[in-house]
Image 1 (tube, rainbow, N blue to C red):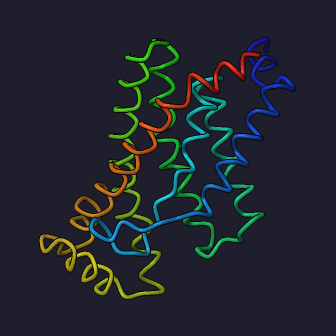
Image 2 (image 1 turned 90 degrees about the vertical axis):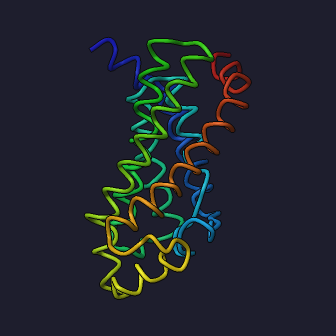
Length: 199
């Protein structure tokens, strides 16, 4: 009960809301990686404030911040995927944030942060690929034939021939690059921001 009160203190709730809102704004600024995946896969940097929140306040705070991010994003820009995209974003985001922050929670050093971020990036790539194969691609096939989606992937990588090769040869590398980029920026800015948070 004491830990729960500490987690949801006024200061922490404000911080989670603030980081979640920043993440939601960053979600609006997407850019494609056409050399990795079809252009309808948009890269964003919205996991950076979520990671900062999780590193500063723990894994549970990171998960809450991830949810806040999605809720605020829905206020700014309504869903175009029947909430399937938002659900996948939460799952894929937590696949990065939770392992990274759990490792950092037990080893609060730069090395611990690096190990956590590497683990989180690998988890995000794996979870993202599986979720795309089982959920996202079947859903998007309602708007674009699955064969056409796979063809778009094959134009980038000829080894893509079905849903699973698309997931692991296009989506997984896409999330791997995203995880690396987000991790590097987080490592660069976290210490400075954590000083402000502690104050």
